[in-house]
Image (cartoon, rainbow, N blue to C red):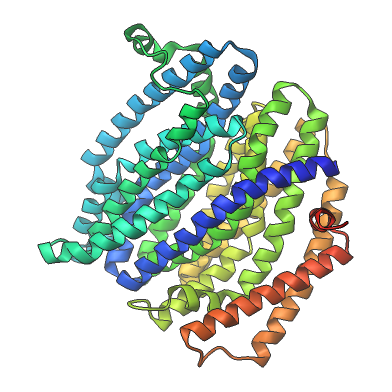
Length: 528
């Protein structure tokens, strides 16, 4: 088991380095947005405009399509002749490029209706709907590019390449920062809204996600055109692999759509709150996505091919071990991150976002949302791992059912609390629903695969939670004794860095003393 954890940790470390770089650049991107646009009308419009194609990306590129393709491609790559595997790649690429092109054209035509559906209260502010529609039309083709990039990532992950595919999103953020930021400064001179530059940068960022993976695909001998022929194109939707992908996707799309419905509902409710609420929640969740990406998504990317392989071999014993190791590693990193973000929310938000058009009020409102999102951080990361495990055993009905139940629960919680909590109600509801989602899926999966080491996971969680509480006490004592109110940006950076270092050291020492599995294995790497 220890060897399996170390092997997972090596794959995870490769992914996490790339994801860490991507998340750092993502925060820089948000800093650029905060400095240029704060949390006003233009930022609200950009968030909603990007969210429309981004919902489809989460649903297809990083959800159903990715998981289904990895499952089928893994089987072809392991059991079929090479030419059949290349045919699968060609047919899948062109079939989904066709479908997504139709979706993009439809989205461009109905952009205004989509905007009014997602944020109806934008119509109360003159020009806000028109601006959001323009930005939506610029960014809608993003879904096509990023979905194709996701297929490339799936191929390379199965071939045990993790770093470059995970670096693709870093290229997206880099393009958004350089191209988007530059155009936002340049375009107003020609009569265009500054935020239009960020929309163009976002679109080109999607193209860069495809471009960075192409050389490695060629190195692996994967060509989209190797088997291309008129006959193959005519029959691409009838290819047995493509049909299997679509059959796997259908229930997965239905299940994943519940998550997107929740995001849609949350955006709709946020647009009804005070001006800036959409932006505050966006900044807060982007901050939460940093640890989710580095921990949850990175571990999921590293473990999903293992899940698919063990399931294809019908080796449920190895499958359960891989699952427990992945969840244990996710808890080891996600739980202390949740505690840390709760206690350090305000200085972190102030450090990252409070400059330019981003005010002290924006810092306070964003930090409040960060704390409530942080409650569900560990569960959110764990769901990123457990849902692909269901896909690997070809059971999608439970994630579907639980996701739709969470939609109902989300609406009830928001309706109950929004008058009192305003935008904070949305963050709180998100955390509560994702925790319940994970708990139900964990119980069901236990029965589906004949059990896994729940007792071991509970013991690990208890040790992790105690270590995290001690870490929180250390950080809180520093916050009480040393105020950051009068610090400059450099001083605030050193202050936050000191808090993080103190937290990491105290958690690491406690984790080693309590013999937390993942921490013990990390220390063993440095033992003579």
